[in-house]
View 1 (cartoon, one colour):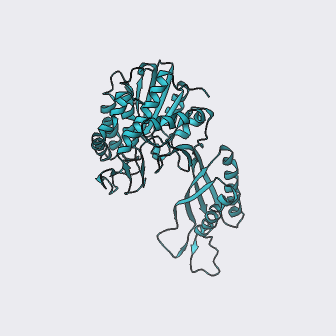
View 2: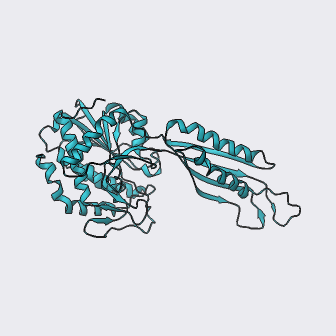
Length: 393
């Protein structure tokens, strides 16, 4: 089929995309690096404001840097939200700060895939779409946030506010390594388990101390077995700390952070009940107190009916730009697509470029897939604008 010229020409811009992504990735925007987040937001703003007619705002996010909101035709009958985050897991003191080409296609660098490459894919798609003849029929809003890697605590309200005025969303998180997009995601949360015991000299006989580290260890080992009882649930023991500088003291304190994930909303209460029951077992022991604090910051992203209707059109758009139509899969990682699904806004997630080795110094992106995936998104938007695709399910 004949693609609109602006969409067809995206693949001619691959060298340009690689250079711009390198510049972006070498701006450190770790979630805790406020100055770097501000610089990154300014760099993004300078590119998005080149799209004629956009309105740009920088809404505050509680406790972190501001977000970037780019709006076009908010009064249009059909309105699409495009989501991305510009924070990364690489803080200002991380040794991984620069990019290098692994070969002609693979760019290695901090955040090149997760998700500065995704934001670049979004930008390229919007640039191409705005040059198509029926673009005026679609309103869109790009919401770029600074805190996704730490749970979107500050920006969650922005998604809840945006969802009711939108009809559909595209989340430009990276695609799976084979090009698949995301059908559903686990809900994510964090639990802090704190155990208190009784200090005593380690050499006292008989010893009336109560070792908080050992009691917490019993709890943690039992907690890691929960997924065998509750399919679809994940429990990971993360940071752990306890005791004191002196090793001749029976430690009266120990604490650990658990990452917990669920596949369905209905998994939440059984998981929390099981964790509380394990804590109660420790609390029945003489001299120990184990408390749990925390909860879920993202509910599961469960597939909504309109997503089922729309996904074949996404596959058709991929086929028509010369790509193998993607499948869609469930994944354990959370995203802001979880928040939008919980707010009732259908969305396709993982529509960004192909990359791998996320959250490590081996992270890379296949740069040619930035243009390819932008073509799919732009063609999808073009077909919405022409009425060839309708958002009814």
